[in-house]
Length: 418
Ligand code: CAA
Image (cartoon, rainbow, N blue to C red; front, side, top):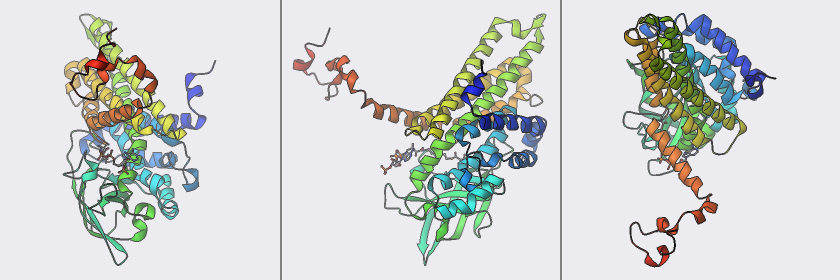
């Protein structure tokens, strides 16, 4: 009989999981608290990941990556996050920032940038959100105008994760304010572009070792080859296509966060003694641990399913990506909260690792689309799919199918009350 992981994952996928685990043991577990306290980036862990080729996991082989897809990304991010959820996002945000190039870049843009990302020479960020445009990603105000063959970008972005650490930023700006569906375009910003400025590194509740920034674009002047895909108006679609592939990364971060919190809580419960015995002997603690374990495992396999669907090129990844992001991140917050409860008073203290899991977990329900937006996306897709379930229509009594909300249709309902 083969171990389950050999049946589900390729050798390459398993290798990435193992490599991430080794890096986590050497660089994350011993230093997570220090980087959190100092709000400093874990350069040693990033360098080790780059050295191992991990920044190329999701990048096609044609551009210097290993093409191990969203599944490879998810396994690596899960392992990193188990040790330090903040490094999980420090790593995964490179996928979020570079996937726009993969899904929308011209051949020249891919050849120019993706090998640098794969080698770990260019860290990435994704600048979509603004002060007044978070969930409403179509309502951006940063403007890009074209004059004499050059694009000029003006305005400010908010919550750009990795902003001050990134070398390349995928930035979304309005190029056609009058258009509804082709209003936005994506541009490739390089950190040294004159006029690009890090305005502020936000003080945050969690993921403190990753810089979350306000960025400003003070008449940043760009040549035409910085317009993603070479055509204006495709930015909104490119941002949504990117999020479909990047949300499993956030979901994997959530699974790692939940798994790490569960391991800490279970280990603690077997060591902490009260009333003359380890607290793991008490049924109330056992019930908490059981729920944490079930929820984490369910989230894990939803994320693996989503990653496998994304890698298979399945059409409707949007729905499962939103489902896995929403379910896994709600799970992470619940499990991290329960872990604090198991640790009791110690869980509330920063001397213990579990408080950081609790603080790091909260942002998962917010970034890369709030869980309210994910539920909206899931529901929209379910309702769209319902049109295909016409074979069920005969089994739904006609009385509930009136097109006149609330009006009585006496002739049609008379025979359906069986
Ligand atoms: N793939 C391709 N195209 C898509 C798409 C997808 N997944 N989703 C929508 N589109 C297309 C639609 O087909 C439509 O095209 P047409 O106009 O040609 O018909 C167009 O985009 C508009 O779609 P909607 O009408 O569905 O758009 P909407 O305005 O109703 O908004 C939304 C949809 C789901 C709410 C979207 O705005 C959204 O996802 N918001 C959340 C944004 C988000 O995740 N922000 C986080 C940014 S990253 C971050 O957190 C910072 C960080 O650094 C980590």
